[in-house]
Picture (cartoon, rainbow, N blue to C red):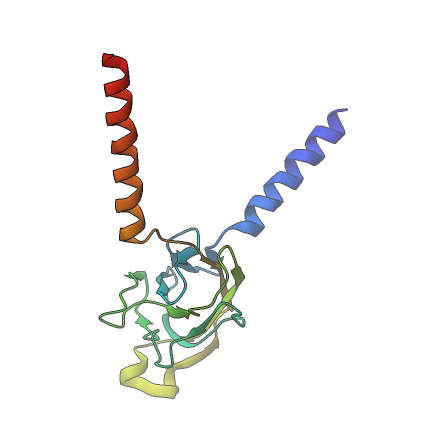
Length: 187
């Protein structure tokens, strides 16, 4: 019985580790904003993710490539959204998603005909390199090599957003029922 409970606790711990949306490797970490990696929007809308990237090593870190799985409910925006930051040792950067200023990690335009409740899940992959100094100053002469690949899980879901006219109709109906009930109770 005790072996079973230890096994269950170990399995639960492994599941929690595997489901995290922040990846840590060799002193660097990468995660999505929101931290859950889940975004949602109505058909035809734009959704996106921000990011956080931390470099806790003694080397400079330069992000060189970002990729994601395929999307069936929308299309990625054509412009390069992710700014491929360069981080000095012991620094971090956090960028919230903002479609108006083209800031963040990734932007997705949901298809106007995307079915409600449909979702995509996948993984962002971030490739980066270590440098012994600022890569903008010393270039490839201070390249140490590839940093571990970092991953962050994501989910995009199509949800319905009530139209203003529908809300007005609902509220007016509820007010009508309330007035009718009040009048009925007075009799």
